View 1: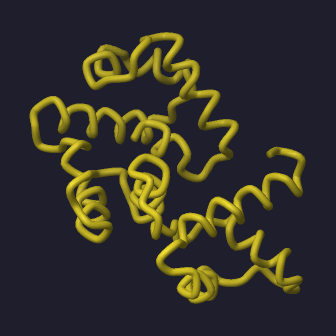
View 2: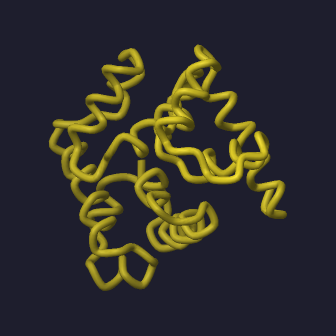
Length: 164
């Protein structure tokens, strides 16, 4: 969940760099270790005030038993997505990427992802980037394997930019 929150509105490289710094400071990523860090340390690691607040909230809810990521395994995609989005700081994109990467759900689709929209634009040779609504309509044709399509599109997007 930490990497999902760190990935909000930044590059994969930036999120991974911050996550790696966090691991170097606290070792295993768990609620107790994360909550032991003060604002200054988190800022030095690379957390914005807002992202630090979101991860603290998830860690706290996990520690007091209000939110257990393990419970999501037994839920269908819609239930898991809804439960994730009840947590402060977890919106649709973060919930969908968590379903895709962490829960490995085959039909998870991160609506609103700019890289996916740009990949579709480039592959279809469109003049403009398609709207997120149009991207979602296109992705509907890939059900029930939209997660596979998302991974292929992301790979294409990164490869075209020499970042794969």
